[in-house]
Amino acid sequence: MLSCADELRAYPVVKQVEIRPAQSDADIDVTLTLTHDAQTRLVVAGSDAIARAVVRRMVKRALALGGKSQRAGLAIDRTIPDLAPFALLPLDADPGLPDLARALQLPMTPHEVAAAVVTGTVRRLDLFRNDRGSVTLHGVLLGGAVAAHHETQGRPVAWWARIDVDDTALCDPNEPLLACAIGNATGYSQLGTLPLLTAADPTSGTVSVGLAVSVDKEIQVRRAHGRAVSIRLCRAPYARSLDSAADPPREQPSVPFTDDGVDGVLRHACTWWVERAAWALYTE
Image (cartoon, helix red, strand yellow):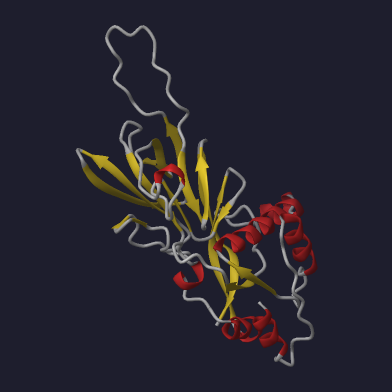
């Protein structure tokens, strides 16, 4: 980050460069408040997860500031206004995780990022929001963890769910799933060497979804594109014994996931939808 700051200071048009560490959402909120005018440009240094945290706070800020009149003027595929652009300086990338800057062929070095901030153009990209209150910039992989995850050690474990893209069901709740990829770019599109998604474009205005389903001991891949994808987890099916008077106890369904480099466990129904061209980056 210091190298990028020095590169920016070398431009005569740049009047001031300030580095502001962000350790919390509150820190991000303060910085966003200070960069609200058109003359101030923001550089986010870090991983996909850091960029997602910044955009998530941008969205919350936009929703808090926006009134009914503002939302009334939005396109049918938008619930938030255009978010302000920023530059992404990739730092501390985990080599085992996908990298958004590389996937989108963005500026990578401090010199390139500084040039994009001062003399580059703005590239608008689709954003995925979900009803759990978060956002996705790059992609989500459920079930087949990108890195070693909890007890699965990176291996896919069967799980069950009803998954719909728009009004189309992609799987039956009784079919064992191995993975579900929800892609805005290409990084979260594979289960091992198996491609779940063949085309994920962050400017298409659609959510790309790919499933790995176990069918007759074979892995079947199903793909779809749409404006939204909903996942409703189901308990594992079982064969009831003829002399059993009651259902045996079953665990609450859950599935591990990696979302923009952040691991978690999904335990509730969730829907992701696309906000076309809602966020933006400075690029060369």
